[in-house]
Length: 287
Image (cartoon, rainbow, N blue to C red; front, side, top):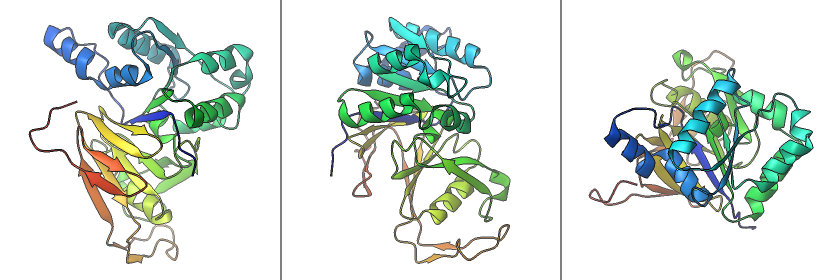
């Protein structure tokens, strides 16, 4: 099996962007925040960082926010790539930026816009190839940008209709990490039920529910380390003893037995291949 050389960093949304004026707060952002880890994994403040706000309904404003955040971290080479159509994904200028980037960062918004405008284009193929083959190349994404990393991508679903068949809508993502189904804003928006249904639909896959200001550094397509201030809820349906998702009519309450759930926080680790958790000692340092 081919070893993946690049790094993925899915983020649960609403990550700290260092906009508070309090000096101590700013220092913590610079030395500990999620975007600090993104920059570190990409090679430091001299890295070429390309921000793609395609998912957002206000891409200009979102791009400006990331420009400010990365500048606060000391980054010198930041470019906003505003892709609004499949044609934009085939432009030579855009392709050149993706080929030269050390890190590509997808913003939040509507994940379907990412797959509709970038999926199966030259940019998508270059991203996938570089992620597979280039050590140190980083693809990060927050909220919609994280969810689009999967192949079986959650496109929508009502938290108020949790555990009802049909409450979750699935769509094809960018297929960067096909072993996972990723959901975001997980705690604040109460998305436990829709991730449960997604895993019931695809019990061979692993569900990652990312809280806000929380992310996962995924190395080699397998080794996961939690970063940020919140939790990652992991759903493992591989040992389900009862799963009636396939036989139920839409709108019917679901039954799942023996669903394995892990709750991880900062510095905890998880192996996708082995489906195993490694939890640090209680007094281990925060990263």
